[in-house]
Image (cartoon, rainbow, N blue to C red):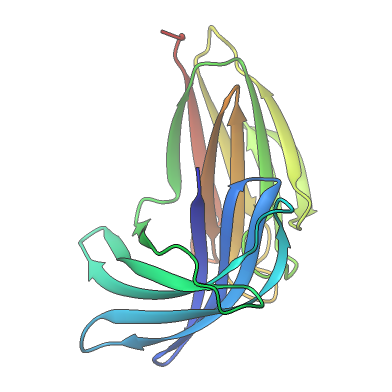
Length: 219
């Protein structure tokens, strides 16, 4: 499975940011991008530049993508969707085109995941520029990580699900915003053979992000 996450900042009609393309925590590409927002047509044109870091199989080459996206705003969410094309890094060979859909919900401070295993592994990464973001993490109101800096190497938390008490809450607390607000983290959850990825963002107004895990017996 293949995912893309974007962290965007804007200056007028110009946008800048970083994109992550990853299938798992060991195969990923991080690229900077720049683009233009057309307020009249509510469209966004984004061009990635060279990768800043990547780790891919020997027979793979990162794709430098160009995105044409439409912005739609609802009461409690924002949606970007459209197409991408591009070329392989250091060549003029085109990479396979595709479609992308990104959603930002107003309720993104809360996430709920149903699991069918008793052991979970949580890996927290900095999701944008590594700029000094620090976090604390609590599990069921018990602090397990205190004021640690997010980086390319994950902060790892292991959780043993109580099969009697079937709901467990994990809270990420933004201790600061680094040099580039807001405090952003990529959380990879490994639950048995399943993997989930969550984009967590906290700022001065909302410093906590809650993830609730609910155990359900395997069918």
